[in-house]
Length: 139
Image (cartoon, rainbow, N blue to C red):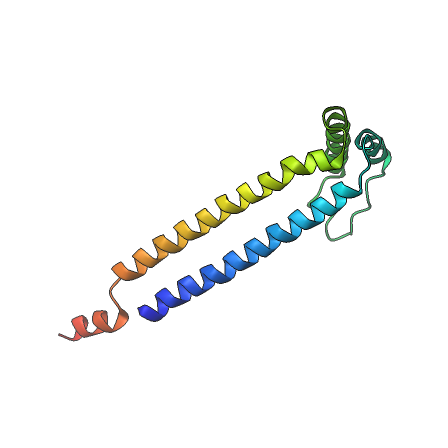
């Protein structure tokens, strides 16, 4: 039973490290990309995105993804970038909001992971071991 608890917490630590790394890389890449955007160019980026064609889908993916949905996502992104360009003059100002939101999402994800690990720990502690169940069956 102790080995199972160690496995639960070991996997939790592994997933927490992976989750933290993913959010950290996302934060760094987002900061780099938004830092590369000059002041006032978010509106231009919206126009550029609106002009992009929908990428062709591989044959194996075509049955599951509707190209009309991709076009809607593209139009939504262009509208969002245009709106952000009107509200926020630069990518750095946008990063001032995105960075904390990423880390709040990290905290909520980590809290969920820890709650799940705690529940598994309690469940493992409540379940009698296999050896005890076999011995009770022989008696």
